[in-house]
Length: 283
Ligand code: NAD
Image 1: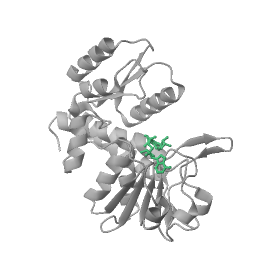
Image 2: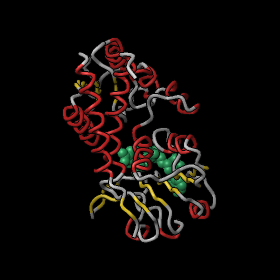
Image 3: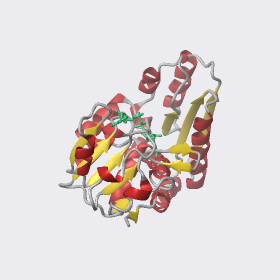
Image 4: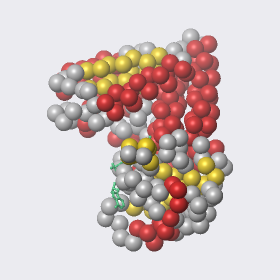
């Protein structure tokens, strides 16, 4: 049976570190602030935003929530972001995605100052991840790297396979593993021989968005398996990995829930602290 990589324990450790970092800044008279913008009524987005606010409060980060109506125009949203870009007490700005269809996501993301872009979606931050010179990393892949480090799972020299090539998970995940000297393959919906490629993986990251997609016959004995997926089913939450059977073969595995999920918010908090430090020329 695989060792469980416990996202609740590891995210608590990250949050404690951030809390101490925020307190240290507060002692120097510096506050840490995060602005969260949400447009429209998407219920899942509302839950995410509420959770982010709660996490901020617990760590001493001042959170400002901007809940805008569904019919907000691009100009209105851009002018709010402009205001927050200039606001000294705000160190991080996050615009909850997805945005309503009439708003150009790319334009909105590009309007956030890169030094306040705590989601690391701005092209300038994406480029910095490519060259390995970055302050912010998208929260989910950053959380996974944190989990591997916490569990002393060495990446160097390992064969790493990432299933999924999204801009927020798959691609940055591949880059981070590469920066740690893993040998990385990124698979996607057009990949041939997916099973064979996965069978070669020492570290397998599933970010496919399909319930129980990774089955035991795709996993090498003793592999480390990281499950990014979250799916609501009749029987509760499940991930992209068939946990029950894969966990019999893997050496370590993240559960769903309680795996990668809790790490994402913790890393957002860490990025916000980093933003505050950089903006105040500390560390
Ligand atoms: P996405 O839909 O943007 O990307 C899915 C990727 O999977 C695509 O690149 C696609 O090419 C690939 N894919 C689809 N079908 C495939 C197939 N048959 N074979 C190989 N590859 C295939 O999804 P995403 O935003 O990267 O998210 C992936 C999953 O992770 C989702 O379940 C999402 O809910 C979850 N997620 C969780 C967190 C968290 O905090 N735990 C954060 C972000 C996303």
